[in-house]
Image 1 (cartoon, rainbow, N blue to C red):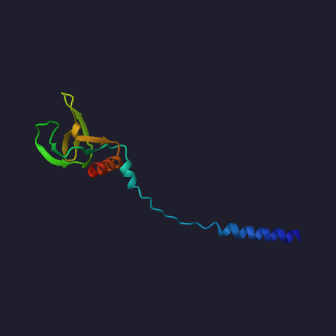
Image 2 (image 1 turned 60 degrees about the horizontal axis):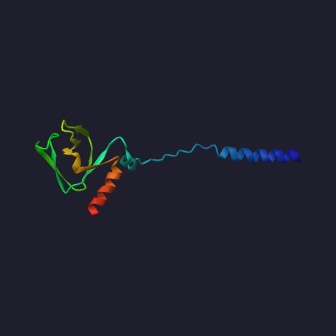
Image 3 (image 1 turned 90 degrees about the vertical axis):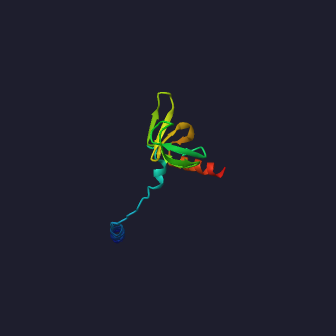
Length: 120
């Protein structure tokens, strides 16, 4: 009798183990677009005045290249400190002096601050 029980148990174990050895193809797509708003490699800024003029260079007398408005979000491309000690930041649209912007560590922070500014 014990031999029959052992054979029965062995057969059950073999069936269970063979049925679970099937290779399953699982393909999951991971969406990382939301994490790009948290990238710390880029600094972001929002315009904190009603209207600003982007300049072609880091000089207040330089030619106006484009315009910006309160709450606009821009990615900082470069930073320059003049001989007079003024900080200027370069964006895709041109250069702005530091007093006209507020700087953030990532795009998500800048976006939240821009929404708050526009509500006020």
